[in-house]
Image 1: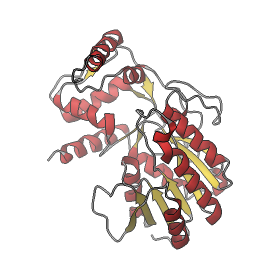
Image 2: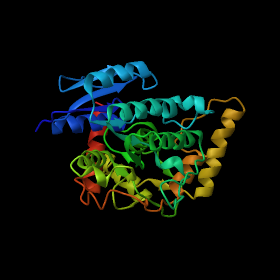
Image 3: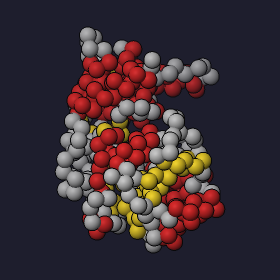
Length: 326
C-alpha cells in the first residue's frame, strides 16, 4: 500500500525515531526525516533525509513549503538529565515552538512526543495537565507540552514510558552489557512493577492512530506503553536468561546496600578520583525500587491488541544485541 501524502519525522536518527521511520516505510508512507545526526544505517529512496535542527525556523519553513506535510511526528529532543539550565534544552522549547507554529500555518496534525517525567517517578497525576517535574529536563518537556496545547495547531501529545527493544541506547544498553558480562547486581529484594513500552508495539500504536477518526486522538494526551505491568527483577532476569541461558539469575542486594555502593562511587568523583563506570546511581536505584501506577490515559481502548508479547520482545532484543556485537 502507498499513500499520496507526506509525513515528517523529526529526531529520526534516534532510538524511537529510527524504529518509527522503518515501520512507516514498511507500511508504504512517504517519509521525510530530519535530525542533527545522520542515520546510523544507510537510507534509501524509500525516504528522504535532511540534516536540519528544529531550532532552525527558516530551514523548517522551507521544508514545510516543499512537502506540505499531513502529519508531523516530533521526536527531536534533548533527553539527558544532566543539563543545569533550560538553555541546555532549547530543542525541547524553542524547537517545539517552531514545529507547532508551522503545523498551525500548514494545517498539519502534530504528534508531539513528550515524556512521563513531566511528573516524578511513581507520581500519579489526576489529569494530563498536572505538572510536577523534578528535573530541568522534565520542566523543559512540560513547557513544550504547554507550547503545543496553546499553539492553535491540531495536536496530540504522546508520553512514552520506558521504551526498550532492539538497538536501545543509554542506560538500557548499559544494562544489557552488564547482563551479558554477568556483572549486573539488582539493587532491591522487593518487587516493583512498571509499565514499559516495547518499541515495536509503540510504533504499531502510533501508526494505528492514523487509521482512526481524528476526533479519537485530537487534542488529547496519551501514554505510550504496553498494557500489562512488568515486574522489574523478572524483566532483567528474562533478559539475562536470553543473553546467558546457562547462567544463574542476577544477584540481588537490599536497596540500602545499593545506595551505599552508589555513595561510594559518588565519593570517588568528589575527591578527584576516576569514578568507576556503573549503572547504579541514586536516581536509578529509586527508579528501580519505585512502582509506577498504571497511566491514566493509554491507547488500550482505541488499540486493544499489540503485536508483540513479552517473550517475543525479549527474544528480539537479545538477538539484536548479539548481532550488534559481531
